[in-house]
Image (cartoon, rainbow, N blue to C red; front, side, top):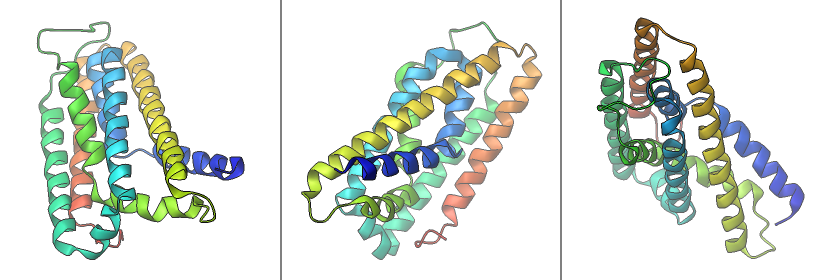
Length: 209
């Protein structure tokens, strides 16, 4: 893959993942309530979710989503329902005060990984987006599979590092917040955004508009 093309792809990917969405909101919310212990779990979940979504896209699922109203609708509502579920859990969660890294009711790392994975992967607009995004950087005169592999590894790595950075930054903010009411308000703001994202996902048109 041409280095210039790779740099352009990496830069575009970085801009894409930095923009807050359901995944970033989930990462920040977990870090604010449970501290840096969740950072690796959420970053790994985001990486796995991106890997699955991008692999399915490159395998042709994105094209199918663009033509199949039924499949798009099923995935759209499944993703929206899960975001609502996460929003309700976040709204009801009792925040952990700064400096408390682990408690008896803290969520296990595997559950946090699973949440981050599902939120990242179960998004039909992301799958369709990859199909529109990746071809712009493809050199059709060179073998396709190696290019796919390089771009997939690049995007997944950038997404994971972005999630890790958000989690660590949110943890530092958490350590400076001592009032449970403040953390609860942050939780509920995040929950509201998650439900709002669910509504946007549920009403999304198949063409992404």
